[in-house]
Length: 223
Image 1: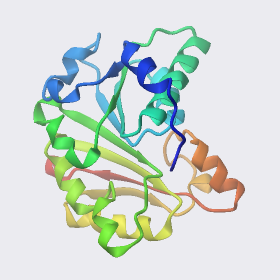
Image 2: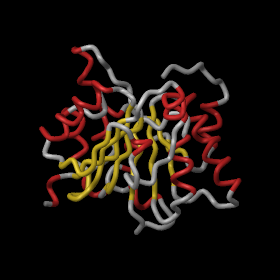
Image 3: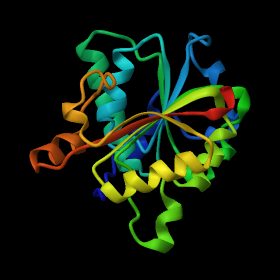
Image 4: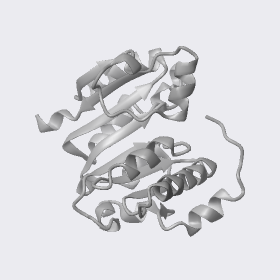
């Protein structure tokens, strides 16, 4: 998703107490950044404007979150969205950090000591052209990287509007040893699939009559 440059985004991020500008320094030590170090640690890869991460973080204070994106403008909007959600519920922002990084290089900022227990991937770029498919956040190349820092029994929550991306991602997960625990081609009509938070993209696609596909995949290492 393209977004216009926002001159205010970088200064606001740099001044924020829950933005990390140097994530490589925390590789293997992310839990030390949080007030409650014993909480589970979840990631959102490609957090966009923060609609999902802001709501899930404010409603789950017993879980720590790191949200990653590559675009300052997106992260600036996510920062404001987090502040809005926590302010509305009169809660302190203590369980979330935003950071800017290229997810293709994610092994530079996480390792097994971080013990990540869940990854969220919401409506990532489908990269439909053949030579670009390896850029997908669910491609086997990326999944193998995630396994380097995921907990042995960790989960990946994935949803998309794109049929081809979804079907090929199922293959990617199986090829890399993940177990597909839940899978649906119509999330809106799937009862008790998960505690879903509708993103801006999701609402837009539903209004267009596009069904949302979703799955939960578990790291196979843990049995």
